[in-house]
Length: 138
Image 1 (cartoon, rainbow, N blue to C red):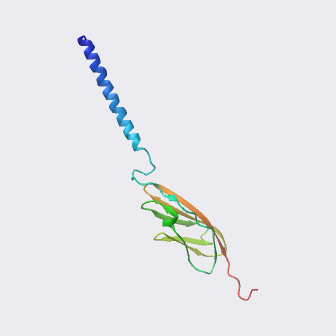
Image 2: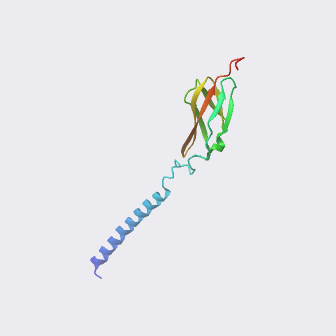
């Protein structure tokens, strides 16, 4: 082989090596992928069970509806709850327990959201709040 052929072959091998190194880097980074984990290594929350629609009476006081740790699965979950109409029913969460407090007659939708570093999941249910019967009514 001539000297120029050897130099040309070395040049090609050098470029091929650089190309293969770059390709290996791209494949390696894409293997990390976007697992929707926000880089945390954990999975986003998922809804494991639904919460049944509820019925309550306006004067009955707070009702513990669900343990959100059983409704959702995932690691390091935090919860937020809300009511579509807080004049009908308000919602709160303490240590994962969802509590609804009936206020006045009507219907509302209660929503619960679980979040962690990887994402969020949500579920909702309806509540019907009835007014108490007037004293002496048949």
